[in-house]
Structures are given as structure tokens and as C-alpha cells.
Amino acid sequence: MKEWYYIADDDRYGPFSLDDLEGRIKETTKVWKKGMTRWEKAMQVQELAGLFRDILPPVPAEDKKLGRETKAFRYIRVDILSGWIFLSMLVVEIVLQMLDLDDTRFYGFVLFLSLLSLVRLLTGMKKYLSLHLEIRKPAINVNWIIVTSIPIYILMAYERGRVIDDTLYSYGILVVVLAFILNGYHYLRLAQKLSLQKRVGVTAFRNFAYLQFFYSILVFMVVIVALFLMIFTDSTALSSPLTLREGLTVLFIEMLPYLFLLLGLMKVKRNYFVHQPAY
Image (cartoon, rainbow, N blue to C red; front, side, top):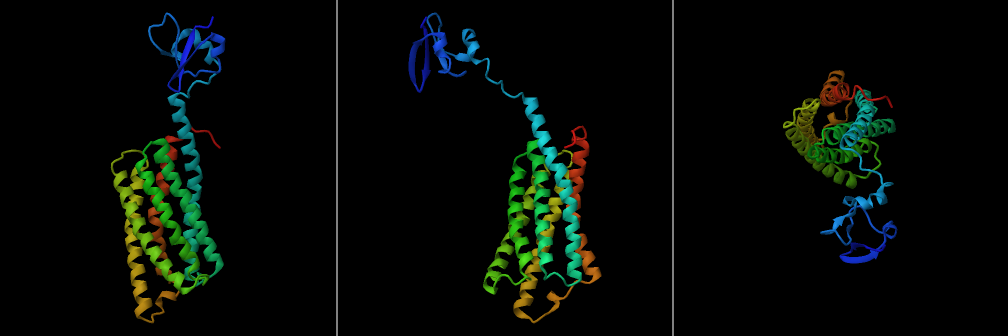
């Protein structure tokens, strides 16, 4: 019997038999037949339930959360390894600078590996905050930190290789100075946002962000002084290799923030993901 009507695109269609409705309506389509007091959603009408038996039910909220946690675990597990690679690359960089080999292609390759490892390391922190803790705002600052780190590493990798001319190098310096300012700003904003959170690993992330903020200020000041010496003096101190004491000092300053970040990720893995399966 053709007694069913439905509404689609602000218009009424029908009458149709029950069999004719199959494929025409969705669960949320408004339907009506004689005897009903008002238009109802198809999924709320018992007679129409058979039309939607093959439709997959929505994923339960607890399973969605488990999926996010599993994805966050995968990122963190890989990024802890990336963290150790990054720290190893820092050691190699300092050794090459002490040996006055920082004008070689190998030095640029090491910096390239450092950049990749840094991106993965920061991504692990972002995924933990956004996927597991569902804290979205700090992820924006992490994205900016990653973006502003790229020009810094690119210029560091190529400025001694003489693959860019003096004019382009001058513009590159300006870009790097701006990148350091933005980098430091977003590290500060990240630290401020994380100060409001009391979760496992977040304290270590906050300390990392504050240390990186102060490190950005320090490097910015060094860059300004270096530019002053390059423009107004004939000093050759900037091109001389690092001494052992200088190398160890620079290495400690550069590694300390990332040790906080790495230890924070390891603490997160140990506390939250101890029961996750191995991948």
C-alpha cells in the first residue's frame, strides 16, 4: 500500500509503499503516513527500522578515545627514538665545529638529519597533547615552532657551503632573525598555555618551552653581535673552530631543553601507554 510520504530538499514526495522507500530515504529523513500525528525521523519509526539494518552504527565514544590513544602512542614511541637521534646529531655538530669541518657537505647533511628528527620530536609532543589530552591550543604554537625552525636550519646548513650569493645570504639573515623572534614568541606562548595543565609529562614540556624561549633570546643576541662584528670589524674570531670548553658549553646549552622534552615523552609512555601493544 502506498501510504508513506517523505520530505527532501524542502519538498514533499509520495505516496510510496514501504518497499519503494528503500534507497530513497536516510535515517534522518522526515516521514509521515496516515495515523501519525506529525512528521518523524525515519530512524524513530519502528516500521522503517528494517531499511537501516545494514547501516554501520556509529563508533562508540570509548572506542574513539582508544583509537586516539593508540595513534598518540605510535607517534610518541617513534619520536622518542627521533629524540635520541636528534641529541646524537647535536653531538656530531659540535664535534665538527671543534674540528673546523663545519664547512663540509657532511655538516649540512647532519643539520638536515637534525631538522627531521626535531620535527618528529615536536610532533610527538603535539600528538600527545591533541590526541590523548585533547588540548588543541598548544598544538598551534608547536606548528609555528616547527615552521620557524626550518629557515634557521636551512641557512645553518648552507651558509658555509657558499651555495648562495652574498645578496641572498643577507636576505637569509633577515629571515632567520625574524624566525628566531617568532620561534621564541611561540615557545613562550606554549609554556604559558602548558602552565595551566596538570597532567603527566606536561611539566617537562613546559620547562622545555621556557628553556627554548631563553635559548632563542640568547641566540638572537649572538646573531646581532655577530652581524655587528662582521659589518664593523675585521674579526676572524667568528670563523675559528670551537675549543673543547666552548664546545662542551654550547652542547650543554643546546641539549638541556631537549632532554626535558625527551624525558617528558618517556614519562608519558611509561605512565599512559604501558599496556599498549607493541607495533
